[in-house]
Image (tube, rainbow, N blue to C red; front, side):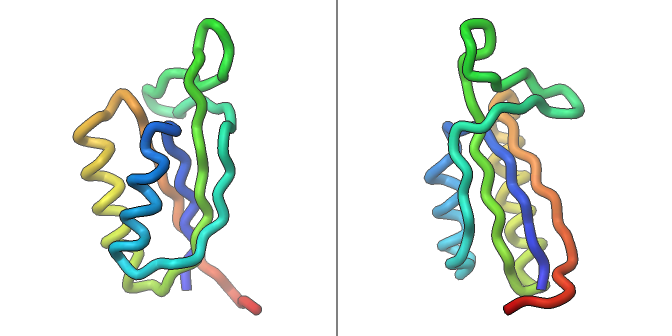
Amino acid sequence: MKSIFIAYDQAYNMEIVELLDQLGCRGFTMWQDIAGRGGINGEPHLGNHAWPTMNNAILTFVPDDKVDDILAGLREKDEETPDLGIRAFVWNVEKSY
């Protein structure tokens, strides 16, 4: 099992949930209206006058064989509209209850 943390521009909100649904990944936890800035070339999303947009984030736990499909779907969205920004990070899950 893997955990995937996905941080993305709030404009993608339903698209990310739909991607997970299409791939049979039902469970997730979502945070809305969070501030941040990409580490490579992303613009700040701070919810203020200068940088009004905000991010959302999802944490999901999926079987190992779903990870590559999820990352491919996210990469495709990011390449279509790179100015919005999506990043995903994958961790091993040692145990779960």
